[in-house]
Length: 134
Image 1: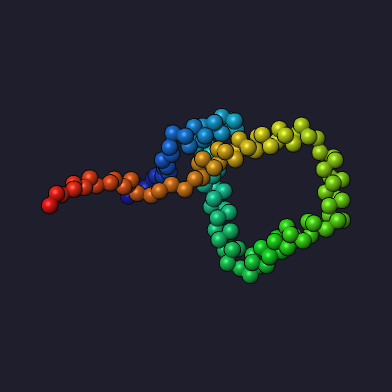
Image 2 (image 1 turned 180 degrees about the vertical axis):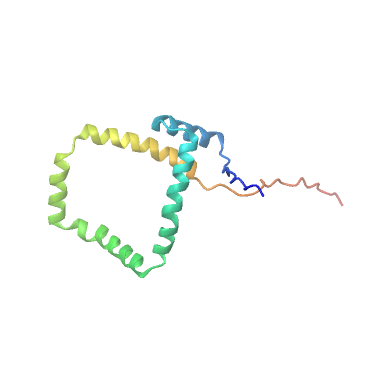
């Protein structure tokens, strides 16, 4: 009996014209093709999403969330931390920071467009109602 060949599977998705343009622009900036993007995206998703789901169900996750809130409110406002932050701020080049902000703004805009929640299913249509005269 001849051996069965393993078939390749394809994965596809539908995107609006705006989303497709954002994806194409990102691909052009990164210098990769669509297949590379999809393969890397799926690989990353398969690695991180299950681990994140499992981690969110632990007590450690909830403790870390509380520590994060504490750090954001109390620790960051302490005078000692503020002095250190001021020293670090002096070492930064303002032009470099501005260029990074600009690049990250473009990336954020693209990712928001693609990751926006979409309504599922067929669009609803309003029924025309005829008013009856009595």
